[in-house]
Image (cartoon, rainbow, N blue to C red; front, side, top):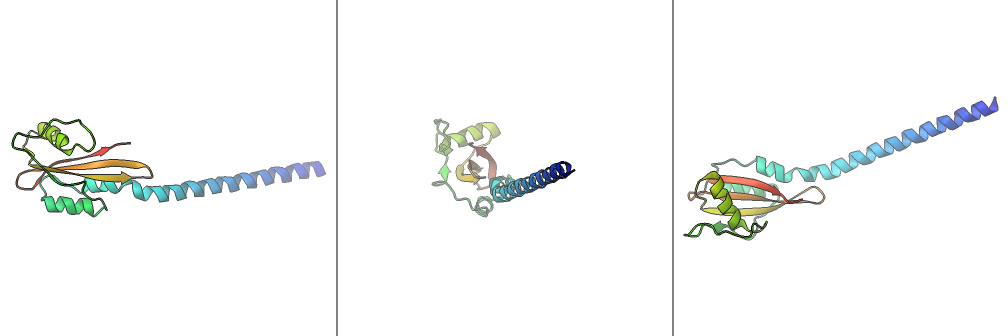
Length: 144
């Protein structure tokens, strides 16, 4: 009888230990989700806050309200059109030319915002404007 009681006590102890480990694991996952979850959506929310046709100043305020700052400068369309470039992440002028071909409208100026998302996430938000300063086109590029 003592062996049955001992075995039952051992099984109960294992169940309690298993339940504790499961609880610890669930708490750890919840903490990680909360810690990393807040970072993930900033660039997505910034893009969702944009609308074609808004003024340049409003588009900038929307992006900057999420803590992102403009990369280098605003780029203006040369008289001969946007140059063909190397298609790099930093080649804002090439991206403006590609966007101009895609939307079939003249893009007068463009700018880019480097953005982060999550623990290791990185990307860019590109904005393209008409001559009157209204937003013609925009997109977000995720690098990783």
